[in-house]
Length: 116
Length: 114
Image 1 (cartoon, each protein chain N blue to C red):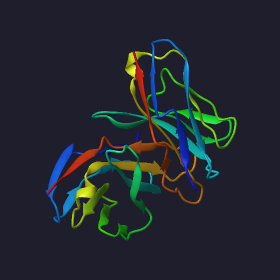
Image 2 (cartoon, rainbow over the protein chains, first blue to last red; image 1 turned 90 degrees about the vertical axis):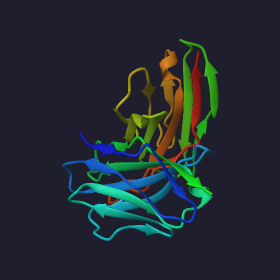
Image 3 (cartoon, chains in turn orange, red; image 1 turned 45 degrees about the horizontal axis):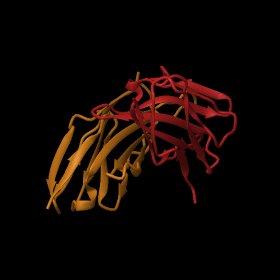
Image 4 (tube, chains in turn blue, purple; image 1 turned 180 degrees about the horizontal axis):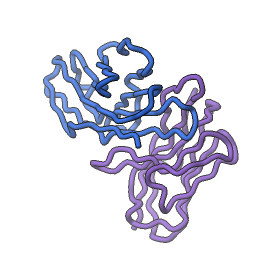
């Protein structure tokens, strides 16, 4: 069964610094999708970034980028120039690309604190 | 505006009193799912549906029911709620096929069972 592991329950970073959140997953599939979601105190789940496994190029969205290592089954999120608004719970998620009987599997989350 | 609408946002109920949390999406997504979020456990999938009249169990389906009679609606039913079902619940929808899009989430429902 597929699993998603976020090994850092909490992290802190100084404002304007760079932080990397780790995520590893286990799957026997070759075609799948990976996501990072942000959950601020408002509880709303917000997509940060999406990566297709068949693409070797790492996805980026402004200050957010990923380091996708398919062979290592690793999908870390880098936040550059951290801002106070980045403080949130971050979830890594996986879904198979088979298009049938697909579960979206989430990690347990990493709570990120931004220190002013 | 593309959205997933969940109701109610907050609910306090007593043990054993049947309740339904509604979920509706306006994006014509095939895939809909329900999650519960508990501290330290992340989001765990309760049920999911890949299309109308097709539902499957997620990782924690016990004590829950769902139905998918229409593409836009995917209600979560607790026939006999118990205190261990006190949690934050999310409904989400996605488009899949050639590609998986992001999951669009509802605003969440905070359920307390006393």
